[in-house]
Image (cartoon, rainbow, N blue to C red; front, side, top):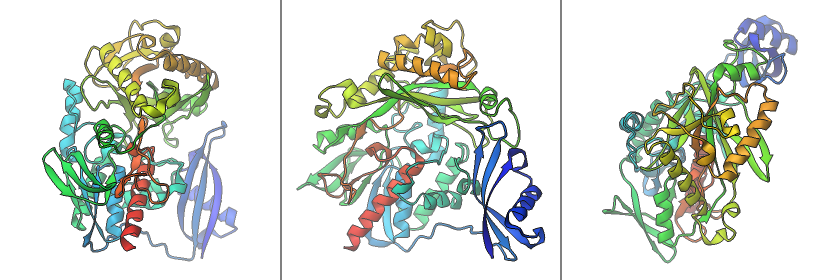
Length: 518
């Protein structure tokens, strides 16, 4: 017999299996000898009070054998007559391919970047030589931006699709089983490349195709239906079912769609800075003075407020993390953050961004789908210039930014290309800088110690989401005017992270499968 148990335990006993077994026996009024196995179904930390607790949802086996499930991906033999072309090998594209194989449909992925191993050399050039390869960087290449975006798997969009299947697939391909139970699951950037490679190898072994350094350069549309795509400006490929999953930074794709008169729209996005604190400080703030406690994970935070009619919030907070250079072309600077699996870096970092609506930038924004994208470009270029026309970022201590003075020196940082001391008030648009200053002051009162001149701001954090939307039919998920074209994931404006992008890819495939079946 299997029972369910919801218990709360002091945080210091989270790794004490004997304590947990006794607590469960008391809760269910069982003898400990009757309990043959305890399986954790969900685990969350409650640190709102000094008496820090873990909440555990458990499946308790009484006099019954537990059999661990190890395999979650079950592809079918593919029908060569049924084929889906996928542009982009990020989370949306890869999970679309996996779902297609489960349904017996052959996926063919074309990715502009390189495989995950070759991609590392281009990342090293950004760090060491400040050279950005526009087709192979932190955003483009096998696994997409998701490979080097920390591996956070938490999403609020569970109503959109099968998030549990996505998590199980990650485990199947090498992620730790804890992601199935933790309230805020996380893999770690150091672990993701191996998982991504295992997915690709399975896609190919099951009958799919994956082609790297294959860039979408044109589309052939006839009678409002997709007929073919061009790759690398030279090869045409017949295609009538295309999942477009190119990510939030594929600006050339937006331009291509606009040139081919395929409808796109301006979309809200957010822009600001990436802030870095000492992780010990964040631990002490969030854990009421505790830090370096083996029973507590490196602490995170989530902050949100309204300032002068616009939302300001923390984004992609990375405990024990690293700030990374994420430009996708020359003459721009972009930052993002990630954490290794153990989250054991001495720094924490988080995006601190202001929500921007198209109407904030242009009254008749419907006439210009690039109004938000152009604004994003302008800020990234200004920061590139301010940083010395390299991948060094303009930076400033937190209180110095509020007071509007250039920092005499800057703290140690995880950002490898380096920092350039600049008054960010002269680089960021006033609508951004002024709201950030007010938000930092407010959050400093809510989290005593957060507002400190030992924290450093890196500018800009600008790729929070796509500033362009590719509109689609809510029911069929096809483009609103172009049959056979399925805008998908973050780049199309329908996802905001690894999990929501993965689920969106799966959803698009299921719609295509329904169409093929009919």
